[in-house]
Image 1 (cartoon, rainbow, N blue to C red):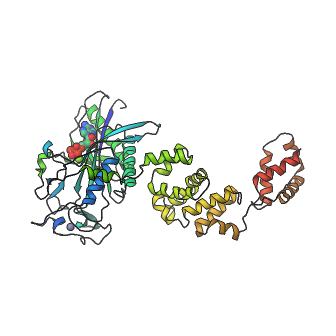
Image 2 (cartoon, rainbow, N blue to C red):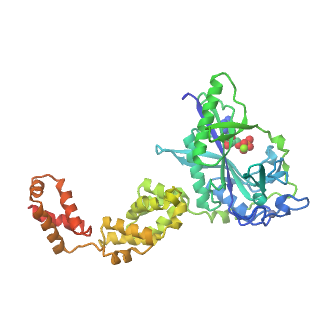
Image 3 (cartoon, rainbow, N blue to C red):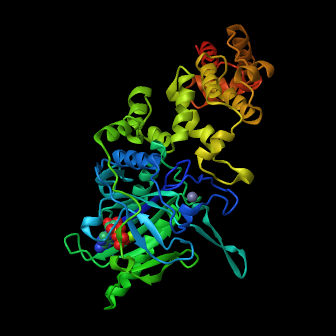
Length: 491
Ligand code: ADP
Ligand code: MG
Ligand code: ZN
């Protein structure tokens, strides 16, 4: 089985985060009352004329620049004809065309570097990014014997990002989609929330007997709506193709879906050809003109991308590569961390708190469910600045690291400032040498046998003594001073 190599290419749809739809001024409002944001243009009434949303075009260019694409100076709109109940117009305006002279997507020939688990990097080609309008939404689960239709999504702007068949394993496919999602979020062109359907992924996969063999016939698995489904669907389809070929069968090119319950791929239809859609240049829209000036204006809006931010966190803030990677994975997490780090003298210590306590709290949703940190952070009662302040109190020696955990729990529960909590609860670290020496003396006198053993070289007992003194001092003793005082009893 292991002798078969995969060839994988992904087609990813990203919903662009514009205020209005791609060709009309209907508002894009997630969760709006069904069929409340529609007009003759997005419903395809005869005679209604589309006009292009410039913000959507700028977002597509921004995404293309972030993915190192060439930007086409004259993108062309084409009409893709098909009948489906979620498409009242009977056609979709897009930028693909089947025939080369119709095929002028806004961006092409880009790439994306993915990082693999073993620390190596692979470059995956981006064939093209084209803009198109979305269809409406069919709702099948509102009643047992009826389907409902919501046209609000008709005409919302999408970018479809098509990769080269450069991906080789299910894990690489996941790494590619992860990175793409990050770039969509960082550039701010979309929310890229797979659960909400504003990032959707189709996976094409074929197998071949070796890396030099010609490509096999591919299956296209539609609408994979989570990273887990992507990984499992690719694995399941690979196994199926291996069994098919090894038992003397042939793989037919087809469109499939992933059946989650049975962990297998199921044919939806045999592959349609370009001529089935009777593509032609969209007669209601002129070709776009993308000037160099526009491209440069959009380039100027490109924010720092995840890779650059990771490098900066490592180089300037002294984080490990691993910490920087975790903290930059979701932009809101990186933003939160930066705000906290700016409010503290020790970014590395802030990172430690962030990686453990803060992310744990952020990822705990209602009823203990695990949620993405980016979603949980805004619900925390305390602010990044307060975390910075807490770390500052540790740095100054006002509180010990141990007491800081108590203060942190209190911040989680109340959102009170660390300084206030320390003061109200009397948690200030005791650094009074006299008081500490006194506490150490008592413990030493109560444990003469252990003292002799420690003197004789049983180093483990040091922890015992420090622990006992800490206990006697209600956790507030300064550990460094306790150790120092203990030394004076050993000589
Ligand atoms: P279509 O619209 O027919 O799906 P696209 O060009 O939009 O065609 O997308 C084709 C996708 O399939 C691309 O991501 C490409 O990399 C991938 N692909 C092409 N040939 C193969 C193959 N033999 N095996 C796996 N993936 C392939
Ligand atoms: Mg396709
Ligand atoms: Zn409309």
